[in-house]
Length: 226
Image (cartoon, rainbow, N blue to C red; front, side, top):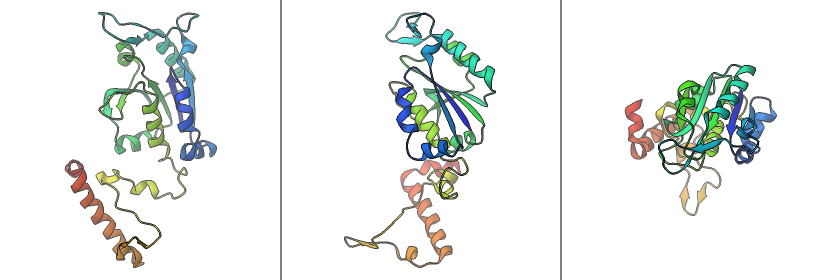
């Protein structure tokens, strides 16, 4: 999979992508992430990519010309399955969206900044708008890092245990069950006996029951969606 990201501050994305699972995915050749500084397509020699909004109001708006030129240049090199704009008023990111996007080949992400991007770019180029939550960030870079991580870890061969991602929270609209490790007895609190039994059928039944109960207690709305 290849992911291209347009950003005013691409350096904000470097650290999340250069460590841990995302680094492993790229080292294995399973994921390519290319960061593009939007000022490369600035409208003048001063690197301008934003301007005042029509109608007045606080905050600058990312201009359409740099974004259009960048998108068109990148689209001339390859076909993108989705052109994604990270924005607070987009569709809330969930595991279903991550699963679907992980099956794509090429994705282009646009990181908003200031008061956002000119509406005409959203109308003419963007195919999907995604939010990582009902709050506002300083820019779309951190949201893009979250989305790349959510997608990248699902690619076959990225995780050491191929089945690991299948039992994450939100797969099948259930939260993950409790997990335990050594020691067996921690300050008087013991690991549930069933996990020590060696009976894999009983263990899986217990984990499913715990997932359902935890979902019912913490996120009952997920059960209504299943």
